[in-house]
Length: 291
Ligand SMILES: Cc1ncc(C[n+]2csc(CCOP(=O)(O)OP(=O)(O)O)c2C)c(N)n1
Ligand code: SF4
Ligand SMILES: [Mg+2]
Image (cartoon, rainbow, N blue to C red; front, side, top):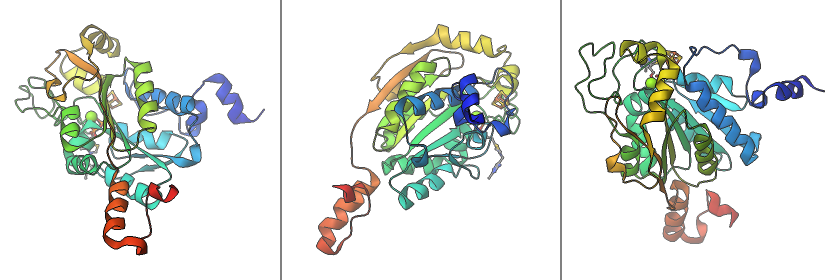
């Protein structure tokens, strides 16, 4: 038996991880690894072609995901995972491109790229690990920090309004939008399975504990305490209006699949338009080539 197969026998997802990079850097009780497990499960259940699946991350604790998955994966600069992923998709429309990103990376420094990829219905999947702060750099206040929560740069509590990420991407044009917590392991897996098969801009937010910075500074306890908070306060509302999904500090968490609709992707729209305008001289670029 090959060494890789022996690993698979020990842990069902080891085959999708770069075991030579272990141990990982994440703190005990951190939820990022749980999201990676859900991703690996989804990839296996979907029987994805691993030669046509790629993961792109930016910077931060979540950004390390790209380094741990045994796929073609790219650790890019802070906030630039989406433009990098867009480039990959445009260069090779046959591959599935998944962005794994922290909330700070995605909605803070990379916020502009996020809304424009959603507006264009770029055919990529974005998985956002939302731990309500810029964790890796010391727990600074982020665009997702709930009002009233403490952060290293908000020692008297955050007074800014937070983004509701599902509302933001829905308003911008995303065609698949879900939110879970990392307690909802199987639901996250199912959403990732669906989103991997969805054509268009898919966005899955996973609320996840940062025990070392966000939880410690707010005296919220350890990873288990946070999972208990998710358990007690999550309410599944599939199809909920994304305007109703604001997160109050330690308040209720509305989770579920909110949006799942069809719309031409960026490449579909480009092909249709240029085909109409240029006619037979236009060579189809995107998936329409297959038709
Ligand atoms: C252009 C640039 N600006 C800032 C940084 C510093 N930086 C590195 S990680 C990070 C925070 C990441 O937060 P988030 O994306 O939420 O990921 P987390 O660590 O919380 O998983 C920041 C600000 C950087 N590396 N590059
Ligand atoms: S600092 Fe927070 S987000 Fe980063 S690994 Fe530790 S618990 Fe996870
Ligand atoms: Mg974060």
